[in-house]
Image: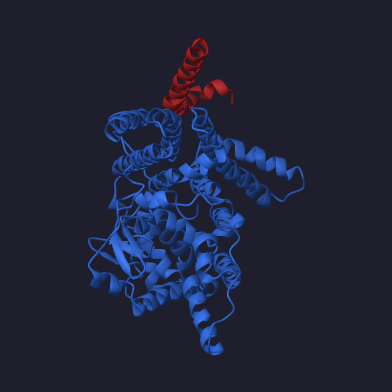
Amino acid sequence: MLLIAHGLVVRSDLPIPEWLFGWAAAVVLVVSFVALAVLWPDPRLQDEGWRPLPEGLGRVLTSRPVEVACGAVGVFLLGLTVYSGLNGTRNTQENFAPTFVYVVFWVGLVPVSVLFGDVFRAFNPWRAIGRALAWVARTAARGPIPAPLAYPRRLGRWPATLGILAFATMELVMSPGPGSKPETLATASLIYSGLTFVAMALYGVEAWAERGEAFSVYFNLFSRISPLERRGRRIGLRKPLSGLTGLEGLPGTVPFVAVMIGSVTFDGLAAAPIWTNVAPHLADFFRNRGVSIEHALQAAFMVGLVACVLLIYGFYRLGVAAARTVGGGFSSERLAGTFVHTLVPIALAYVSAHYLTFLLFQGQGIVFLGPLPNIGALLSDPLGNGSDVFGTAGHTINFGVITANETWYAQVGFVVAGHVAALTLAHDRALALYDEARLAVRSQYWMLAVMIGFTSLALWLLSQANS
Amino acid sequence: MPPLAHAGHWLIGLSYFAPVIGFLVWLGYVQIRDRGKEDDE
């Protein structure tokens, strides 16, 4: 990833070796599994139990002026990203676009979605522009405009999967390099916007935003963990995690989540000696076939990224195939789609643990974390041309926000909590799916193996940042 | 570099995955044992 490494601070004085944390995490999962088997005999999360908050609050937050204002903010930020990318300094760290896209938008919106629900839907610039254009078209036509095509079911979430893989390629394969350059980000934003508007014109704004638009799908998945949800013109509370149980296992959903986890896995692996030893040989392989040095290294990284995605996908499918052997008469495809929602808290654990310091340190370019949070330097000088709009251009990163050991404990906490949440979701779904409680528990032995595997991998990857 | 020179790194790396390896071995054993019991019945 661009800019600085995520875990650049060296830990010291941990009471036990780092690998022993992995063992402790596995024990926590096994104990949680037993506790769930004994204390959680009936499905509790399949019904979200949504109940509305006081009507006035929902009415204000979902009112047309607030919707328009949120959309306008999203469009402004997209415009600022493109403008600063094309007209600002070429220095990655001094330009608004890279930090905003890779840190604040890609990473920072994840905890916001988990806490407050599907916030991105309100600020989504493509949805806002699409809806505005549809309104203009209706007004100009003085009546209804032709209905969009029906979104093909077989497409499912595949377009979003390709979109998120393309973004991960820019972030992890082409950075450092063209992928982190402000002008590349601006151009990519424009191309992505164009494609999105064409797709929205074909299939409708809401249908495309719900299934095809990569970032909408990405943040919506995380928002399903949140206890807050909007329904119509009301905002209400539901059981945390329960929003995930309503996730439809459409085609492309498992690959989408595999890209979510696999891309973070590769980002961690890229810092590991095992990869730094293998990558040059892979690059040589491509160079010997006439590929230039720069592109050979990118090809090697692309192989690494795809391999990590396939590893995550394969490990999950293996767990599902094994769970199928306990009986119940379900196909592997059905089980894979039925349990895919359990991978979302794992994706959250990976993102939170891996990008914690990245967000806390690099994010200060946008939100400075001093004694009081303040406007970051990049907002005062988004183009990097010496301007100082808010008088905060001189702010530098405050590395005292979190210590190395605090980071490690927080990372382990995220990983364990995410996997316990995943285990809970899987247990709850199994109880709803299988007629016999005995089969439900036996099928979960294999899901437990998957969870322990993902936990071990996550902690090993985090340890590699300091190796 | 000979692989043995990196044995320490490999072993520490492998130790992270010991729980999942151990769990899978146990799970495989239980599956085989249960199959044997079902066949006997």
